[in-house]
Length: 458
Image (tube, rainbow, N blue to C red; front, top):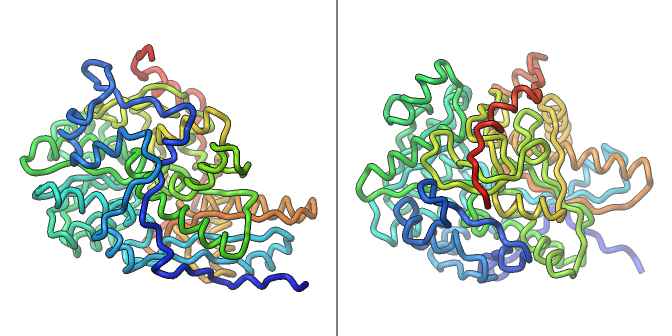
């Protein structure tokens, strides 16, 4: 019997799109630790969280028992503008590498925001509109989340205030202009428009900023403005929930051809893409049905998983947010101004941190010159210019495929291509000109962040 020919792109029909998000926390034996009120160190209630987040999102944040949550029809209608996204067989990359491995990637860059971030942005904007709010505030690193949220807010006629990490604001002016075109206001962070921003600038003059800084400013702006709430593009349980459409579609596409992956790889900064991609596969692993190898890939310059500590920490530099138990480098850690802007967060999702601590997934860190080498190789044979964040997953996918070449094993590798890199040409220019360097923090560099971890006996 001849081998089934797998098409270059596996598409689902609209009728096959997920109608429910999958909440993998429901199947976790060890649940993620709760968010803590920074004043009382007691678990945050839905009512307390509703002072910062939309009420419905606050409920989703603490729900660790409901396995499937209905996707509202209006969100599903929006999804149909760019979903289902294709699962692509990387035949050209396989041939270039001369590997027996079969490589697939889930491409999330086929929308104007250029990334997977729109999956959660539209959900959060929907709940804000449903609650009758005037607008939302947020932070953004590389700008993909800010772009996605500005699109979603324009769709629902909501005001959108974005605090963009200063180094990305300067490196990626066109990403900033896309946000402004969709009606958002964009402020480089840290800024002098908030009290916490002024404090950070005073303590760290000339700082290039961090996601932790930008989160502090966005939260302050939301809490201090009537009719506004704060929304976040990664880390939170609610975001991983919304992003589960990535993994659900991926698994449905693989199931169409009876394909069972051996290795699933995703880039990891806060956890939105990785958590979404692995969700149904991790669900099977948690229930003992399958035993996939799942790899998180992070930058060596911001190694939360591989060198961080599993402890309660503030989610932001200004220490105004709840405390989360996660793998963290310390809320005061300011990462180097590397080009993987969306992965420059000091901590990792509580859900993913618990899974990692339980040994259900592994993590590796990679240096940015190796990442851009992989990105360039991928672009030349697969015809897509990948985002720097996505290219971390590409690096490890190539490495695993080359291992298969050495051993002769025919493993099936699936990775997440989170978005495109067309707004990241400053980074590509530095790589092409030979001006890109690698930075790996020393133990001494990491010590101040660890020393500042709050003393929480939980």
